[in-house]
Amino acid sequence: MSGKISRRQMLSIGAATIAGAALSKSAAHAINNGGGTDYRPFRGYNPARRGDRPYWEKSYSGGPVDVKPLPPVLPGRGYKPVVVPNGAALPFKIVDGVKVFHLIAEEVNHEFDPGLRAQCWGFNGRVNSTVIEAVEGERVRIYVTNCLHVATSIHWHGFNLPNGMDGVGGLTQPYIKAGDTVKYEFTLRQYGTQMFHSHHDEMTQMGMGMIGMFIIHPRSPRPEQVVDRDFSLMISEWAIPAGTSRPNTLEMTDFNVLTINGKVFPSTSPLVCKTGDKVRIRLGNLGATDHHPMHIHGHHFRVTATDGEQIPLSAQWPESTVLVAVGQTRNVEFITDAPGDWAFHCHMTHHVMNQMGHDFPNMLGVNPQGLDEQLRPLLPSYMTMGHTGMDMGKMAEAMPYPRNTISMKGATGPFGDYISMGGLFTVLKVRDGLKSYDEDPGSYNHPPGTVALKATDEELRRDGIDISKLAVDGDAKSPSGEKGSSHSAH
Ligand SMILES: [Cu+2]
Image 1: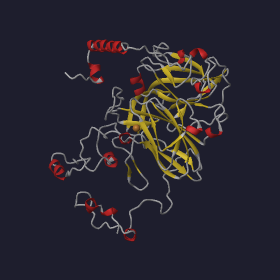
Image 2: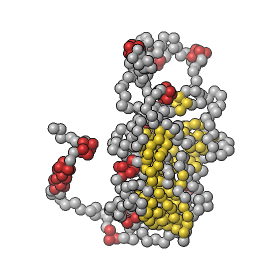
Image 3: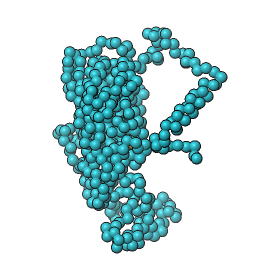
Image 4: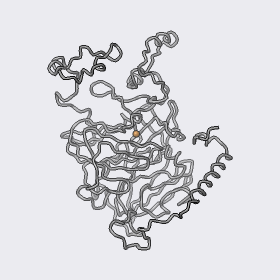
């Protein structure tokens, strides 16, 4: 028998195997302790010297736990609220100087896109798109009511808080049992892009949608921290086999629905900006296993903050792609210099495809003509797919396929051609003279002569581009491959 065992197999094997695994674990522990030298703490660090630290030993954990809170701040007064595409900030009230929130964990019948719904678990009627927003120094009291039929617990991810408020079910608190309401209360001794999520049976509960962003605004923002547009985007991934309506949270790698704030493109609301706006995009990833390199077109951004802290100006770095790993947040900021419709998407190509991007035979390059002819008497509508690639969303939309699936869905673009993107994809819409941020300005109206179009014969002649001997893939031998004629000087 192979020495390797998958986690999947592990789940189906009995307690004897689990006991065996526990034994081998303790054996490994013994080996680790059997070396010649005892582990010693790093000598340069002396915990007894509290308050006596040099500047390079700054506390990164918010300072004393028992600080006095600062007064609450209202949106639009002391901070500019974040924009949550396809989502909303959780309402609050102020009671005796404390901001009070009520988070409700519940089952939600969620639409990822017209054509795909699933029974998920979320907060206050939303999936992946409920945002809690507060201000540094405030005291928050968050009631969590559990309307699920299973116990849960809510963790405040990336927070400096008293241990008993950390929300790890069983470790720092008893579970929030079905029907119970539990009270969390702490003072925000930091600012930044943080998150919250279930911390009990995480694989199931986070996979079902129990995740959210928690934005803490700085109390006194520095000039460089002030922006015109501040977007909050939560990234996640789902396994919802075609025709089913419950996410499969046992899936480890083969996710087929990739979402921003719980939506797939084209249902992801665009990020609408004016030309010249300073824009912040806050990205969080609480998916199961995948990291997402989020890429912007036509611009460069600076990575300005992690979930740990604001990055000093001198250390911020320019990128056009920022990797957001599981459990991380990243803030990126840039000026919208260029009007247009700019793609903003995960650069893992499988993450901008939904269902059918996998579990599909590789037909690329196959000539299906004979096969189609042979099969048509048996299956009149039979047509081989995939031999020209997977850009077939439009075709797939018109074909019969299982109920409740979005297939290779993308969207028809302004030129009548199909945008062969789905999943983790949205559009940054930058416009001159935008009237309102609240309306989708539609497709970009390109100034004449600024769109890549089919070259005219006259243009080809003018620039000495000879295509007379070139043939479409496979029809005839391409001379460009033989002599590299396209690079030769004339
Ligand atoms: Cu991705």
